[in-house]
Image (cartoon, rainbow, N blue to C red):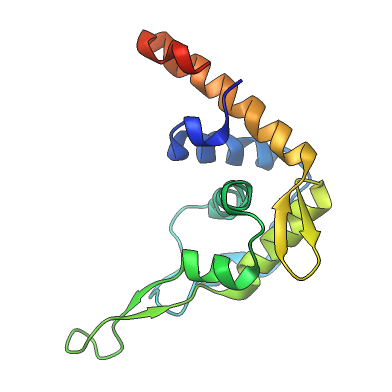
Amino acid sequence: MAKVYDVPPDVLISKLSEILKGEDIPPPSWITFVKTGSHKEKPPYERDWWYTRCASILRKVYLHGPIGINELRKEYGGAYNGSYGYGARHHKDAAGAIIRHAVQSLEKLGYIEKVERKGRVASKQGMQKMDKLASDILNEISKTNPQLKIYS
C-alpha cells in the first residue's frame, strides 16, 4: 500500500481538495475578503483556495505531526519587502485565523486530533483516507509509467 510521501504532492492535494469539497467543511463567511498573510498584497485568485489550503494542511500534519499552529504559520508564510523594493526581504508568517479555522474544521471531520502540549497529528481515520487516496493515485500514475508499479 502506498503512503502519502510516495505520490506527487500537487496531485494528492488537488484530489484531496475535491474530496473535501463534497464533505461538510464549509469555509468561513469572511474567507473571500482576506489575504493569506501580511506578506501578500492581494487575496488568492482561485475561488476554491480554502479547500486547497485545508488539503495542504492535512498533508503537512500527516507528514510532520505533531505540529502546531505557529509552525504551520511559518510554513505558509513568505518573504515581505516593506520598503517597496529598496530594502532587504524579511520573512512574515501566514495569517493565523485561516490556519486555525482550517485545522478546527479538519478536527470536526475527524481527520486531525489534538495532542496535549505538542500540537496536532493525523488521526487513524485521516491516515487511512490519505493512504487510500495515495494508493489510488499511484495506481493511476503507474498506468502511464509502468516502472512505478514496484511502489504499489
